[in-house]
Image (tube, rainbow, N blue to C red):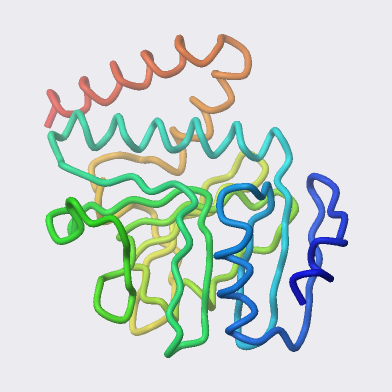
Length: 215
């Protein structure tokens, strides 16, 4: 299976689905390919998805990730940002690589850990997906128990919170309840593409500070 995988050519912005892939093959792919690959992998009960992101995809996820870090820093909240770390659970036969993810409420539990095992460790508190061309795997995140998922698609941010095992759309994030992020994050992301990253980032930080002072 590994030899066949290496023969695949996936253009940026495209995805392929492979059926009847064993969990062991998925584990082997992760180990053998390690950080050398550009593709993101997602696995669910024998179905392996391979996606290569576009430059726009990577830009959007980096800016949104930076905005989340500013929110946490200005609230003086410790966090761990783990980017596109692979989260997998052999018992649930699921594996996913978010575009960005954060440990917030469970930061202290994960502090200093070099490996995460979802059979004993909690999943990330917040995962972010930039859903431009690939389909977001809600079921994987639900089964793994990620409390909150953000999906950004075509200048629209959707906040999904896990309730009774399923995601429900929400107006506010449970981690940032005082901020109208579905309105504001797309605006500052768009501004960064006109004014430049630094100008948009500093403007967002000023806005966050003003909101905190008002409260």
